[in-house]
Length: 142
Image (tube, rainbow, N blue to C red; front, top):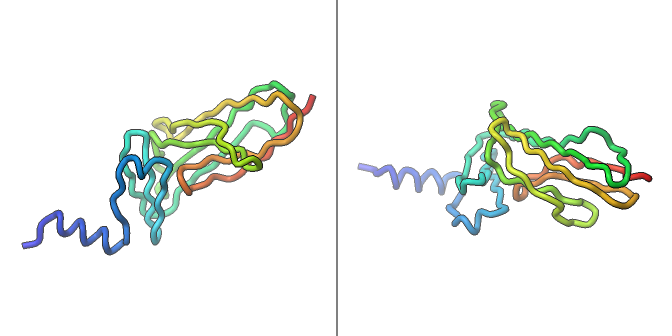
């Protein structure tokens, strides 16, 4: 008789996934043959069979220096179910620098507020490991 453990191990080998410790999973996203695995804030791995919707939005693209920018991210699985308690980081794309972080709520939404104190441009994207949202380009003027 085959045990549940043996069946699970066979499944993991079949899809070529392996277990990671919590430390190894931090900032890690795994994708293999249409199976997406996302690490949530509670340390659980969520298996998603299919695509995810990961979209970063902002109210407008031009802001005054010192004005707060409110970023919003939606994170859903392929059945339009929200992915909650997922750790996200917000990255300045041009400088490859993390400018903030957030966690999705029960509706799969994370909000991040950011303020720039000098004129110029900023490109921001949101990430969960190697899963990356669209990039939003902003301009800051006097």
